[in-house]
Image (cartoon, rainbow, N blue to C red; front, top):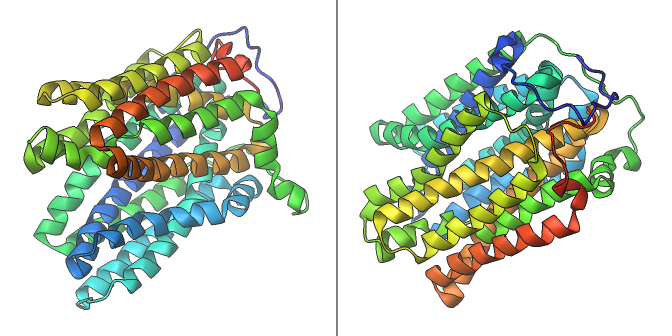
Length: 417
């Protein structure tokens, strides 16, 4: 494997790799997909349970907030831990901790819970485990596959996450409908299996951080992102594009008041972006992008905004679903390019801290994007909120393409690893 400090010749395009030929990546991929699937089960089950107890929609907002807050509050610590210690072991411990959180909610449910604060307390612990898990998981890919396979690994990693995002909520709803405890028991078992699989991943080469902990080492991730314009441009593009273009929070409004399709239609709308994303991720797993990566990223972010506008204006069910599928497809192209650039452009010694920053930006864009959409819809209506958001995303793609010329000119998905 290439040494973490050795630059790759940018004139050499990416090869068509097969990450699954690496046994370590196979175990990693299964473990991470199981983790995403289990997390979706827990999120859906907890949402139903909390609302059953309180009947207060505000509490549903708190469910997401208490899981995201630890990643924000601990960002300086989680990335540093990922750079100092064995990332494979961090992932295994965190998956076991998440499984124990599922077991705790299982026990609370069996006890006939009538208040929600114990659930929120467990969710805080769950969020802390996720906060440490995500930077390690994002950073480990570059340690367990050779450079020529990283494009392929990221494509399959994204497809696994999308599959979990599509199927996990369905499984969570079905399991909770059969028996609430069944949802948490299933999540616990899958998390434990994932934890064990991570221990089977061969210990990879990792350039660990040996410097004494200081303020300088803690903020090294932020400092690197700020000074490395390719990474800064890629991360900030995602933040503002999703912040403006995110329409998923308003799907219930479209399903009920605009398209008049009811709950079944809402399920189709929610699955649309995932279908597009999975399809493109699998395609990219076999046919990676070979040239003009930076320019393509800006183009597809622009198309994401365009199809958001189409969805916002549509009053035809099939057209709305097609628009969502195309939104998911375009978003996956930009995600694939962005994540590959970040992984390959970032030195291994600081990769955990950079990925911690990246995960906070991703989480913030999703959370704040839904908040932005809700506030905008309350002020000007759902359709204008989605349409103006899509137009804003197109504008962001153009502005960022001008402001970050190094990112725009990035041709091959290679960099310093």
